[in-house]
Length: 497
Length: 82
Image (tube, rainbow over all chains, first blue to last red; front, top):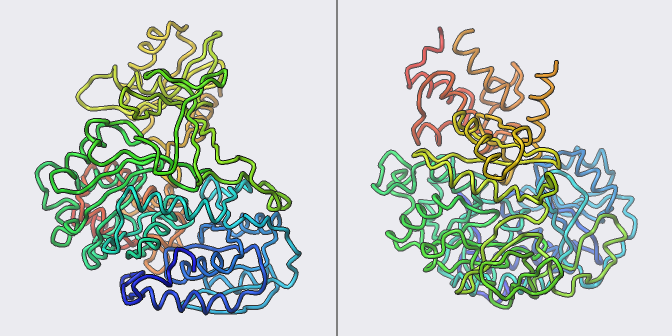
C-alpha cells in the first residue's frame, strides 16, 4: 500500500483529532474499504479539510492508481466548477454537507460514504486520458482557482517523502500537528513523510491564533509544528519566542503546551532574519530543532533544508539540497557558476522534480517534460561552505532608465539602511517606469523615497512611497504584490480626481 | 457612531459582513466566510486602533465568535452600550 501504511506497527496511532484516534491497522482497513468502491483509473477531485475522511479518501484514490487533484474544501463553488469543466473528473470526494448542492450542478450518484464525506460519481463523466506516470495533481496557487496544475508521479511523492523523513529524522515516535492545509504542498509533505515513518499526525483545522489549537497540541502532546513565515509572525505576536517565558503568552497557554515540541520547521517563503534568529535562539534553549526549508510545488515539496545546528550560523540561508537532490547556479549564458558570492538562477535536480504543468485536459496525457531538472526562477548565491542564499526572484526586476534593478534587493538595502530601533518592513513593487515602496511606518515610508533615489542614482520621480497600515498578504501569508500595486493605482486615482 | 457600531463596521470591512450575520450561529472563526488567521489579525489590529487598547494573547486566541468579541472588548473597558 502507498507509503507502506499496511506494514507499520498496526496498533500505533496514525491519525489523531480532538476526539478520535485511528491506528495504522484501522487506517489500512479504511483505505482498503474505500478502494473497493472505485472502478478503473479515474481523475478524482478531492475537496480537502484536515480530517480523517479527507485523508482516507485521498490515500485510497492514490493507492488504487487513480489521480487525485487536491483542492481547498473552501474554494468557491464557481471556481471548482470551472476546474471541473476543464478537467472532467470521473469522481469527487467531498464533505457530505456539500453533496446536495453538487448533485444539483452535477447529476450523479453517491457510491460511498465515510465519516462525513461522500464519493460522488457524475453521470456524464467523459473518458480522460491519464499518462501512466501521473499520480497526483496540485494547484500552484492555493485557492485562486487558476487552472494551472502541477503534475506529479508516484516516484516524485515517495522519493520526496523519503528524503524529508531522512533529514528530519522522523521516527514513529513523532506526532506532527497540522498547521497547514493538506491541499497545500507543504502541508501534504508533512502528512506523507509522517505516514512513511509510521508516525502520528494530529489533524486540525484550527490556527495558532485559536485557543483550541493550543489545547489540542497540549492534549495530544504534539512533537512538531510546521509553518510558513506568516505562522511564525503569528507565533511571535503570541509572544511564544520571548526570552523570558511570558505566562500571558502562547508559551503559558495550557500549562506550557509547547513543552512536548521537539521540532519546528519553516518553509513557504523567507522568514525575516530577525525573527529567524529569535525563534532559533528560543528553540536552541529548549532543545527544539528548528529547520528552515526551501521548496516549490514543482518539486513536489522540498528541495533544500538548513540543518538545525546551522540555523544560527547561517541565518538567512536556505541551506543545502535534500538527500538525493543537487543544487547549482547558472548565469545568464546558462554556464554553471563555481564561485561563492556570485548570484545566478538556482537549478535543482532530483527524483522529486515534477513531470510538468497541466493547463487543460489533454495535458494529463503528457509524460515527463522536465527530466528531473527544475529551473526554480529564484536568484541565489552560495557561500564558501556551499550554503545557498536566495537573493531575489528572477522576475522581480524592473528596468529603470536602462538599468536592471532587483526589487527584492531594494527591499533588503532599505531594511538594512533604515537602522532605527523599530525595524520597518519595506515592500517594493514596480513597473519599468517607477519603483514603489510600501511601508507600515509613515516615517519610514517618507524616508525611503529620497534615500532610495539617491542610493540608486535615480530621478526623484522614479520612486514613490506609500504608507500602509498593514502589508497585504495572501492566504499563505506571502506578500501580496498585486494587491500593493492595486493600492497604488487607487491612491493615484484619488489624487487625479 | 456607538461602540457597537464601530465593532460592526470593523467586521463589515474585514469580513464583508452584513447586519443579519451578527450572531454566533453565523459568525464563528473558521466557519464564517473568510474569518481565518489573516483576517483575524487584521480585525484585532483595527479594534486595537479604533478603541485604543491592546489585546493580550488570551484575548487573541479566545476571540472566536461575534459575541466573544463584544465580551473581550467589554472586559478591556469598552462600554458597548455607549
